[in-house]
Amino acid sequence: MTAIPWDSRLRYHCQLRQSASERRADTHPLTWRLREDGARVGLGEYREKEGYQAAIRTLETFTPGDVIGTMKEANVRGRGGGGFSAGLKWSLTQVGDHLPRGYLICNADEMEPGTFKDRLLLEQQPHLLIEGMIIAGFANRSCYGYIFLRGEYVEAARSLALAIEEAREAGLLGRDIAGSGFDFDLALHTGAGRYICGEETALINSLEGKRANPRAKPPFPGQSGAWGKPTVVNNVETLCNAPGVMLHGADWYQGLSGGSVRMAAPNFTACPGLWNARGSGNCPSVPAVGRFSIVLAVCATAIRSKPGYPGAEARVSCCRNISMYLWISIPLGNTVAVWALA
Image 1 (cartoon, rainbow, N blue to C red):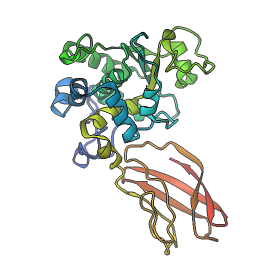
Image 2: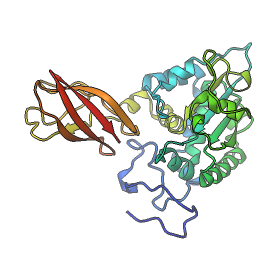
Image 3: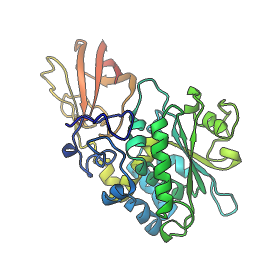
Image 4: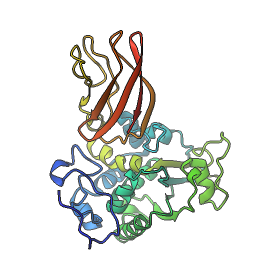
């Protein structure tokens, strides 16, 4: 894989370990468009690679209820850490002809130490996020969207600001998007460096210019969020999954895991591999992890094992793209406790 040149347009980069030849649209919906040199994917290049097709098709063909139903069926989970169903969250937003249109907020305040999964997409593929926010805004009948960006992400801010202007000039943001009759625009807001802004209500308070303290619930943001209006808050990666789901369907998204979760451990001859969530024979079963799930940490997870099986160190490879190192210990009858760190 070619290294990023020193004279590239961005001052610093996240770089994928996979070459472009390893990434395909049907298997790597978040990363297949990324360039080998790490430069930003502009509007023209993005549209050549199926960009904004999902958003335009959604606005022309589907209703907000259709979008929410597809996201539920695909079981897209929040990638900010909570893992809450995105479709279910959208369905809980209070909407109606007698209610004002609310807001959509993208939580790009990536403050976890050593975490940069969102930074990669924000710096190098900002149009994917914008397209995802158009779809989410349509589903939630939002009138305006905000990208709440970590203040230290200077390059991401430049990339996003340029992408927003490109989309606006192309008629993909603002009034009557692509002739659909749907009005939606975006604004970029950089945070002031508060870790607590990763919590959605603290983020909303900060966006409103208040002290970034979490709010008591209820009411939830879906009923009364930013400036008292219904508000949906989603992570960058969550929103970036929406275009692929709406373009290819829920079954395609569900099939991304492909039954490719495998675990191998020393001397585990009776059951050399674990595949999918079903298991077979004496083999235990484990939940399948989507190819694009970024696993940060799993604590105190229990898996079934043969009675008396000794503790062992194992490496779990999820769909060849994600890996965790697990320390399996404390055999308890036919179960063992597992602690995992990505």
